[in-house]
Image 1 (cartoon, rainbow, N blue to C red):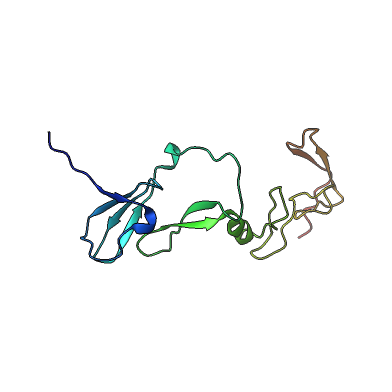
Image 2 (cartoon, rainbow, N blue to C red):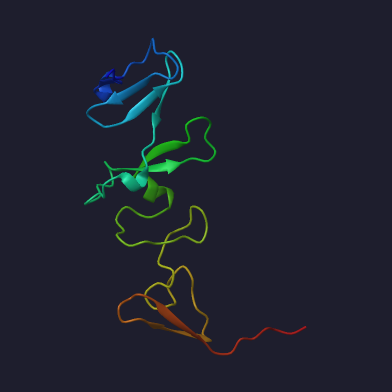
Length: 150
């Protein structure tokens, strides 16, 4: 029975010229598929994320995330290193816990801080909080709520 064999080779040796639109190229070292869109251009085929294996440990400088860039023209999927993604979210590289910022470019911190008065969101004196023993959640208790006058 006749078979079709896709062009294959190392990623470093992918052709950059003399390609035909629609011509597939399979990388034997990376397991990626690239399809030519013209004589000198090609697009990578993005894998189904749920078919991939789980990463055991993250190296923030060397590991990448796949990101869908909604404003991109053409290929919308791109890569960003874990450290660059954290920096884009304004999370300092030294932090191991998730933090948030109130505004873009603002200083990131814990939502409630360590005691409810030193976090990104701070409580008024009419409020109290109780932290779960396992640090899973915080219960807020509100005293008087003054809706002001008219």
